[in-house]
Length: 299
Length: 204
Image (cartoon, rainbow over the protein chains, first blue to last red):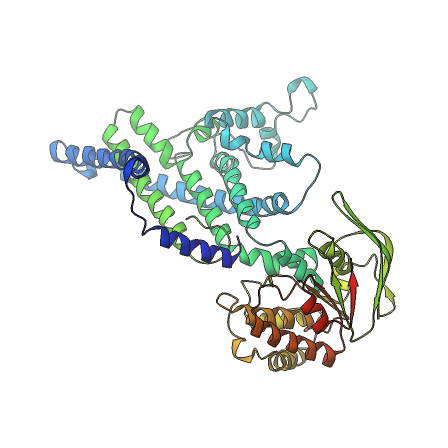
């Protein structure tokens, strides 16, 4: 969307706020909002209530968890999510631009394939990754090279059930979301920007890096933060592909799972609250960073 | 001199055929036609942004029919300016000369020269957001001619300007293209603009 159009739209939205909601239409709008907002708030309130009640009755925060272990989990979560988010943006920028600007044979099919990680159940992605790395190429072909994991082990990089598997599992899902966001961001930048730059002496690549990429900065930040948030909350693919070994391949989402498995519901809820706090912080940062300027706007 | 020789251009199902005209150095040709007549398609082909089906284009005696847009020495001013939101007005004017690898002192002098010619000196450190229609137009024109192109393409460039601003901007453009001796192709559907700026009129 062009800047002038966006400014005009913002003014229209501002003017619209003076309209009074009344009758069935107003009830429908506000009722829907309160039903869903209420559900989200109740989820958080219930968690906080549960932890506070547990503290009062039985034990303090100190006894609820192995904090040293949790700190390891937080560090690994941050590290793996950040690496996944950076990789996702690096891949999403060229793919998003390709989908936004070029027409080519099979584009709609490729577009649909890129959405598979978004719609597929997370467990299936984890299982597929496991099969890909452990049972591919199929033994029936007998190429004598072993599985993909065997080949990578030869290079000193074992994948399955390692920290690298966590990053691959997170990246597989998060990148699909980042691509969608980058495509939207590039769609909003007038393609004539590049055309003008090219007539001025820029190659197609130079026009992209000088004109398009800087204008999509906010979209890029938003795509990175979304990829980071998706990675933070990823569980299914990590459980299947990387495992949930205490202190080794344990990220926050698997910590919750491990605490539930050991019967420590209070600890699991406490970790969930930490994750909620991180998610809220992420969303707020994205909103602040994308509030002004060109590219993708979260509002 | 710009020579368009019997060119054909395709845009989807639409095809323009057998277009020929010439523009002398420093002359302005106004290209008129109704909406959908292919004016912008033709301009894109001349700028190298669209492939020719047949025919040839030469600029200052050089055949540029198969030359990439960046090597044609043309300047383009689109209908609604399409300024770069990440660049200041100064960076807009300097961008072409920087790409053409001019010396820093020459770039500095060129920015100052065009800022004075187009009366945008007070805007040099501003970003496009908040510029008025007339100011943005002057910046877009300065950006297009900064690297001294052989051909300036104005694609419905004066649409949306009110009467007084339109006259001011057109006067500035007329003076600048005369002084710089640039051949100009003006695409418009306004007879007033064509007659005010064009030395000749070509109907599509």
